[in-house]
Length: 150
Image 1 (tube, helix red, strand yellow):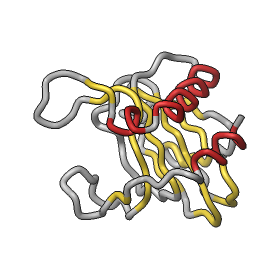
Image 2 (spheres, helix red, strand yellow):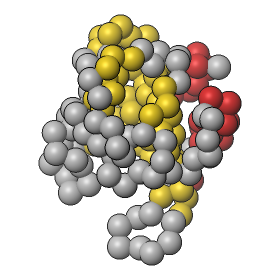
Image 3 (spheres, helix red, strand yellow):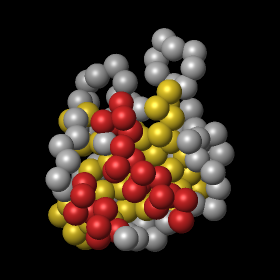
Image 4 (cartoon, helix red, strand yellow):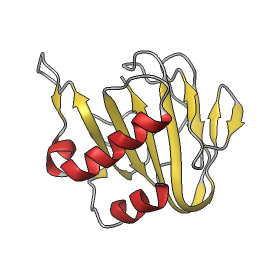
């Protein structure tokens, strides 16, 4: 299932997230990524389906279906990252647990949660990203990660 999703994702061009934009958290490097599922846009009071969910509905359904298989909880949003090395941070707007899984053709790139190393390669990791500091180490190759959360 990860191989099929990897093949589909390699055919999609996602926006480059800039380091200096108003929506970027301090310290995150440039990387490619997208948010799928329900989001609450800035300056709006109601949640709505993200622009990537609307632009790539088949991909959104595939990513959502994977989450329904691997997440032991319900989720509303999915963060997709390509080749992102995250600095230590907490997800201040997330509620409850998050489920992270990564896949692709890469080596290294472990996730650290409260200083403990985990390997998320095709191995879902569940943790509270709001309460626990987390980051990942650099990797070699092409790495996708999906974070399911609310």
